[in-house]
Length: 415
Image (cartoon, rainbow, N blue to C red; front, side, top):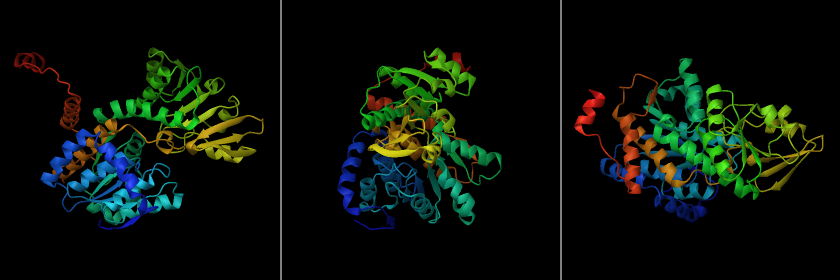
């Protein structure tokens, strides 16, 4: 064991964390292939990578793969409740630099971000945009050393687009979330399963027969709604985008404004990436016993701050469930403090799903190195060849083969 820079909860937890990482290693065959390539090629030799992603076992394995390629890793979490202390300890035991604790205060969370940025990273791997925002706003002297970065999630890409429009973004970013092998699978099937895993293990209540309100019908909302239907719920979708609302109707779901859905919903799940989706004036109209949770990146979709201010009492109803009693006498429940329910109250997406997402991250980071100084655009889509390689690796891991176009068919289609 080589001790490096770190600030974690308890190094003695490392064996438990190593057991979790070993389990996901055995179920992430794409990263296994990429790790072998990285070991042979050492593409990241001499490169410092700052990473802020939900720090659990799958993320830890991505860090191992990048380190196997020669990178010096500086790792922190991307949410105060999603860090798993034993996984952080396992990474430190392996000799990586980790600055993250579960249940971090806002000050501790920011300290972790600062710790990894202050090392002067060459590549940034971000989930939500906190690292990219921080280095631009408070460490401008380090910007010349950044080759580029990769963004994991929808919320982060929205922040990047805003920075790009205002001319603030100083280096190329790979839009990992927009890759087909990311959002079509991670956002839909990963979020769809992991959100319900978090809800069900936290509440221990039945879903069948309940009215479930899903706020937002992007790829994540589609996955959550699909799984809710499969569990026997009556699903209501709320949207601001008329095209997505039309999709929800044609997928067989009821669509209505949140003000109307609030009157009939039993369980509410926000997946929009926007703030103020369920404000207090909506919460006051809900049924007694309504359950609220969020699957968007930041804890701004459900007005938890307003609940804390307005409730006449608050009690811990169960682990990861807070019960707020309003002046009317009604009680509403909030899961995981309004933070990402699938990570704050669960283990996040399945390993096989994150295998694809993190394979894209790893290959996109290498792409940045291979194209250093050549990417004029600040916002870069993941190249089609990376997407297709991931898909073929995944099919191969499943033992699935597909057809190929004949020369005649290629001429017919492409001329």
